[in-house]
Length: 401
Image 1: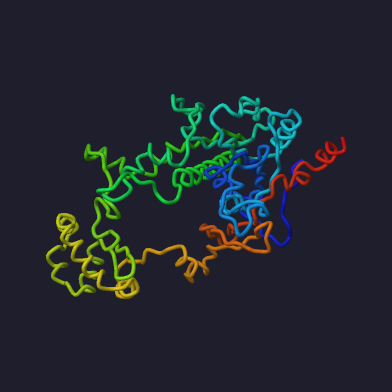
Image 2: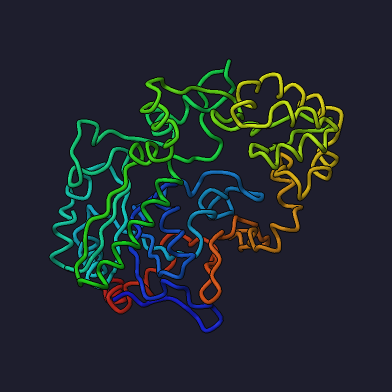
């Protein structure tokens, strides 16, 4: 049986009543189940022989040969428990099915049809647990929710961003299509999948019925690029790259300063007037008093703003505009680590790094709740670290045999 984790020193999360069997690896799936773990769910990471592919990915604190895993794995697998199972082995399949009987949610991100090869597909698992919520994250979705000829193809963040139009609208106007820095094809898909799981949990509370939750990366990128979709529909023209500016708002852009870059978002009339006043150019506010005026003259006006910021440091620009116009410096991660706001909001969290005497910092949870606030609940697990407590007496009996 599954022995739920938790000690008296840990706060109970909003999802502390849920047990999630996490068959995912790399980024999209683990990020989804990490969100559930931060919210208090008991997430049992079921790893294939050898473990998650990204356990060995850098960076490491010091010595990769001594450390159990790198920062990639640590960041998105914190607060989970681990057991290693080989679905090609009959005993391990039986152990998995015994866990399914008591689980609330199963999450996997294999190619479509993989679980069926082991006779562990949704329909089979439902026979063991009719209330089970089975969730998949795939590049192109699952045939159960809409069959296409792309299903079965492998996909990664880069593929999803390319197909979903993200790369076409990202980057400088005269530059090549560009992926976003963070893996939004993975992370946005994972977040949507988490929402779907929670919706299915709520539905089960009302009806007693489990269901299949399916989130495709390509589908998610269509949702993510919603602006480009409606622009295509309304204008009949496919939008393309335009740097850091906005197609319908101005000024809403990044500007170079004497020591870096700042962003300024002064597109409404009041903020535009305040920006012109701060620049000592009140006549610009009078001559371009409407959004339509500003959009029509955006290239000229951008040069005026750019000349003003280039003579000033980041701090000087931001201090001048503070509480008058939305503006901020373009920060590095070093700046983020030095930001008092980030510390006050618990957005950097220390966890143990196995194989060292060090602690490392990972991103905290942006979801804040007054009674059951999410939080990373400890470091990521060692491979197969929790076998005995997950399988209980059954694991001990097997070991004796």
